[in-house]
Length: 63
Image 1 (cartoon, rainbow, N blue to C red):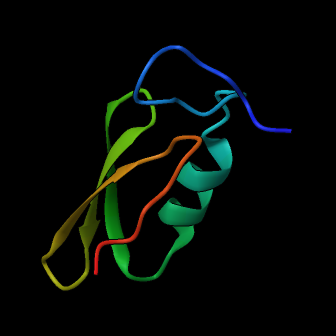
Image 2 (image 1 turned 135 degrees about the vertical axis):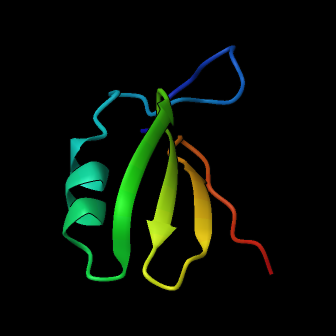
């Protein structure tokens, strides 16, 4: 069943970000996880790159 929200962007329906935070904290390529806002993160990678992530009910992959 999908979640419905009149707000955009759609935050995680259950608001549980612990799984994502735990996996990223444990990841060997992630040096630091910075929480920007609810469901919004910046990953500081071992390579020096930074990746901004928004955890929500929809997803897309840049090509």
